[in-house]
Image 1: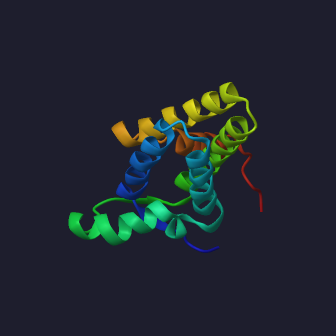
Image 2: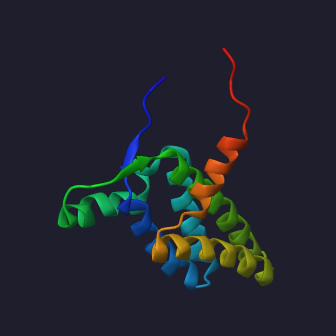
Image 3: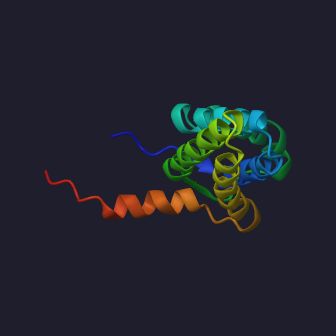
Length: 139
């Protein structure tokens, strides 16, 4: 088994701030772009995610070395959850169901704002709950 990939804990919080701004626009087209950003983070990994690349190249060098890291899996799962909400919201907005778009976007916005403002990653907590609920593997 390969060791877990570790990431700077400041990166996902930086991404959550950008995500919050995008979600606040209420634009179906920008939400579609955000869905793509979430998809890259969820399926290709956070090292390939656009906001992660911005953080590593523009922000992290100015902050200095990371003093705290975390396993990539919980934030990556959070990206998957965000992708689901952004996808539903995009379809809602672009298919003429703005209430569906607004509700899905609002749910994603609450999660992004929690992470950005106070460092609480709702998707990460869901990941950890799911891991604990899974039965242990027996050799």
